[in-house]
Image 1 (cartoon, rainbow, N blue to C red):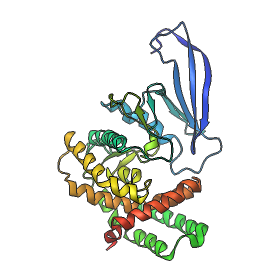
Image 2 (image 1 turned 30 degrees about the vertical axis):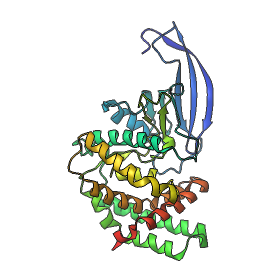
Image 3 (image 1 turned 60 degrees about the vertical axis):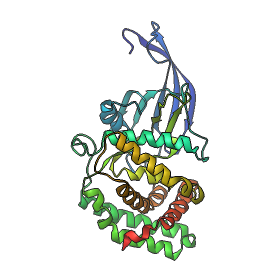
Image 4 (image 1 turned 30 degrees about the horizontal axis):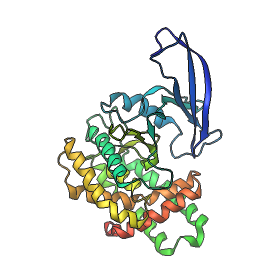
Length: 331
């Protein structure tokens, strides 16, 4: 984009930490002036001293912008001008398109979006999922399949995390809920068979709460942008839906919106050409994803996510398990 120009000055216009990263808005000056080049960019990097992340921080996000984003025909992610991850130092960054003039967050955390906003967001997720649905590149050049042996190792690791978690929360976690976790761990090889079928799977975001979405200020444009791709992977499409709704919404709102939004998502998949995946299959996958999402708050606590995030997530997802009869999946 620079042509013969060069960046001659960089000013930090805004800088703020998130839970796991640091984000800066940089104002750029060019010499000679480059009218086509961006006047500002978003620079994202790791928080100093933070090493206890579920994934090596930044590696997955850099891989997404290097491997996945360039192959996408639909405009669903920010344009990336540069991305790097250093194996030795673990330093990382993407330099991203600054959309602050044209886009905004759907709502201020923790206020849920409107129903219309939710429909728009799920439509964008459906377009992303449909684009990678059962793609032959999955696990070959895009993403990695996790084989059953690796899953078994991870389950052993999770069991250790859960023991530490249960000790940490003490009697705030009832005996019934402790038993549910033990039953899920015992049934995990069977529950994960759906993933190991390698059918009706796609790329998923992995952290698809609504505050990882930018909505266009011009509501007619439909130009929704998804960001924060550090946990993308191959998975069931319902994983992101369960994380967005069952993990983050309290029962009254979820009960009111859940089914019509699942209907809307499924219709959007069909409109994008996905076949062989009926509405019942989505319901089955969604209930499975809700059940398995109970693992997430435990992992969040293990990797130093603050309690004001994981405790609320824990309560909401366990209420959703009860509402949706997910214990039936344990036999």
